[in-house]
Length: 160
Length: 160
Image (cartoon, chains in turn purple, blue):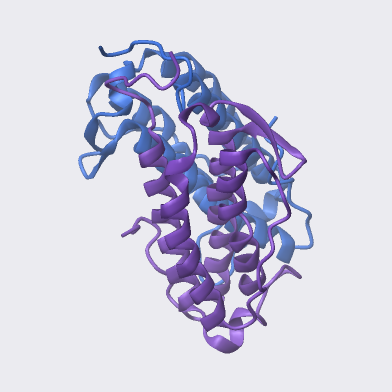
């Protein structure tokens, strides 16, 4: 019965992708709101800079989609950006790749339990939720950094 | 065809409730990590205190579940807590009520678009996601407050 269409699913793969990309658009605006000289230098409470957090975000989406599709959890390699322009260029490249590669995930994988990155045991949906919520969590911290710098962050509810 | 069972849904109502409660357990630990005299007094960047944010969180779950079940979006009234003990007592009461009332939501409501609180147009699933992610967003800010106070926040990934 795998993959049978129902009239009222709680969530579809397409809606999950769009939700993810909506959050990624907001995160992109948050990165862009930082002055160049603060992105990799400013922090509070001994925490990481928002630039370092953004590099963490960049390490997740494509390995997750690749792992969900192939069940191969190779270490993902990417050139670690060190400037705002490099972060945003990598961000935009991944946005396109995510849209291209996500539809290849087999529907059954969303409810299957897997050991992601060789260590996190969860279903495919939980894994995508984790990536989204990890980004929301740290982006909220970026908002405190921006406010402390006297900069108005983008509206949380705007995802276009 | 509404409500037909499928073998591999992306998300079930039960999994969404458990995910929500997992986040609420983490938020409860975050509230509890604040010293009594800081919860409603400390903030950074001109932002709200974490106690005020927690009161916002407390205003969402039960009206959402009530609105999803009945399509009535009455203003939710509750005694606004002003101490940590009151916040946690209200939190625990809502945890129980949420578990009791969530199963009454008709399955079709998760994919139906509604105008929640008379202003937010989204599906039932998106509405629950919004409540969860709003909490994740502000809880991340609470982590910066705790770190700035020299207090180690609870682990983000622990939801038990």
